[in-house]
Length: 470
Ligand code: ADQ
Image (cartoon, rainbow, N blue to C red; front, side, top):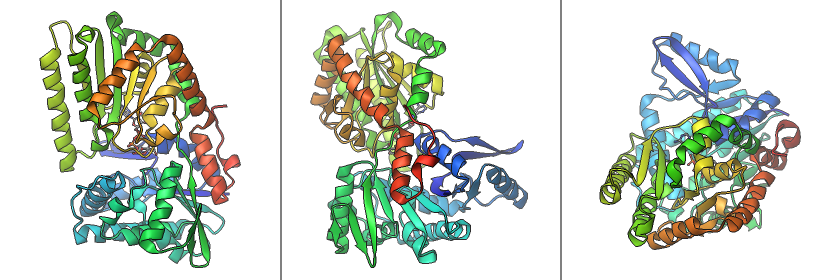
């Protein structure tokens, strides 16, 4: 059975420069988890190629050809649509609401129009390309209207939708003027997937309260149809992280990072206001204030991946994080010791694995997070069975990773106490907790996630999703 995948971004990233057009594989959980499904099923992957449509015709043709060679189809978006649909409506309005953050900008009617128009274009492209025997798997909050729009165009198609963010409270969702259209859009799918049972319950509550639809514990009525709502926690390619963690060059790099016996706290995030970075840094300062004996003996390494750099809220966050780092380093640093090592940018896979191996304590403290794959990557990388995970109770991952040190990400005092407890934890306790974390992560890797969702959708998951952590 073919699976046609639809997402805002494609599994390859397009580059246009003086040398012509090239496509390179995209990183990240979505591309990794679905690449195998895409290759095995022989279906297409439909999404935005990542460059504006206003390019000379020969370049547009070259992009289409490169994409076709890897089984992808581009949905063209004009520069003003990228601003209105992607930057302002999806990232500016929907993203904070889905994370229960109420101080989002009000949507301009023209931005909502752009969101609808682009969702219609996706539905048109998918309707033209989908074959009757295929299942269609649509991803994430940029495309919430597509299931219904596609259902109108192809009534008998099997359609699945997976939301990678949290599902918000009714109060937060109701602040969006078009919440009813968004919910109804999702109900065009046969299966709606979310990361946790709590999000599934919230989705069903919202459908009842805001649309007045009848629901059962895992289904919604939609006319004569029933929409199945399912919790499928996404994960990472556990065996790939384990294999990389055991490479000699990773071990060598990790021991170099643990210079002079310093204890290492680590943060790895997209630079996003949902990730709780400012409070995490403040808590580190609180720790150094309370426990002067730690000064010179611990270090916080914070990696921040550039994200949505043209959105004002992200520019403000970057300034806040960088001034906080400078303030803490000026206050506690000495000529021999810098308390926070901050890096703004991406690192390669080997460096990331080495950091995960080198860390004594991994700090994953988002204010809200659909799942958080960094927490699972860290655990998958700890083939040595050591290391402590400090994890926000508001990350989807907390539902599975119960033996992490669970924290309230907004409570600076509580965070500082958890850092202290993590640093003081005995080796036997660290090992018992890590063993349980590792067995949770190994039980359910990213291939299992895809398999489960496709089985629910009737897309023959077992045959399509080849690898597993074993
Ligand atoms: P994201 O918000 O992007 O994803 P997350 O799940 O943490 O968040 O994944 C981030 C990815 O970026 C990880 O794979 C990580 O390794 C990588 N990364 C982070 N910093 C890096 C750096 N400096 N260099 C290189 N790589 C880096 C959304 C939701 C999440 C959900 C995922 C998947 O917001 O909640 O877990 O989708 O559903």
